[in-house]
Length: 278
Image 1 (tube, rainbow, N blue to C red):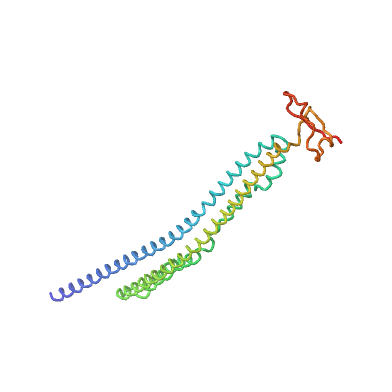
Image 2 (cartoon, rainbow, N blue to C red; image 1 turned 90 degrees about the vertical axis):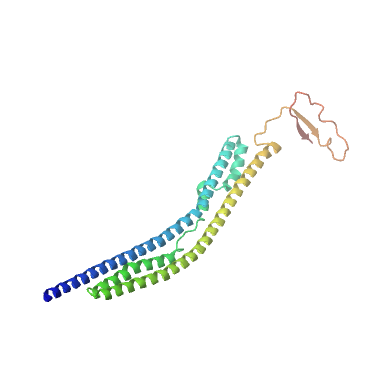
């Protein structure tokens, strides 16, 4: 009877130990899984930071595209204003041809503005390198460390537990240090990006001002050229049928008076041409 009780007690103890070992193993698996999920979340967080940075950088440069579109519209309006003038007469056509060459084409104008957009290339080298370092640490160091724990302590649950907690603890410390480095590098990248964005804007504003000035000055010169025809006469001056002549003696500046040259003017005359005779 005592022998039977002894065997039963041993079996019970063995069952309890086995149950505890199973529970401990399951707990460690959950512990590892939970930390791996945290590592995956951390990698996604840093990746999102990089993606948001790139998106914001490009968004802040979209104003330059808007400026290019606005300048294209201005040039199209200038062309729509000047093209009909060419058809008026030869004088107007010559005026347009004389000055319109200073206005850049739409393609040239757009390119000069768009080229002001600086690239994001190289700005994120440091934070991206830090991100890759942490990602590789999770994929290699943590994975290999956990595999080594299982290899060294396949049956010694306590030693296995201590080994795993050390690998996870080291990974958590490395995560904090690397994350701090990542955000320090990202802050530095923001400063570089701000400088490039500011430089891009200054460049585009300069191009817009230069092109706008050329368009306005050209239009003023053309308008002035056309106006001069009204003042000085054009290439195609009509012949006046009414003519009168005066002699040099009559307009001698030494004389205080001259004979009235307008005696022949009548109400139905709209012009009178004078010719000087010697």
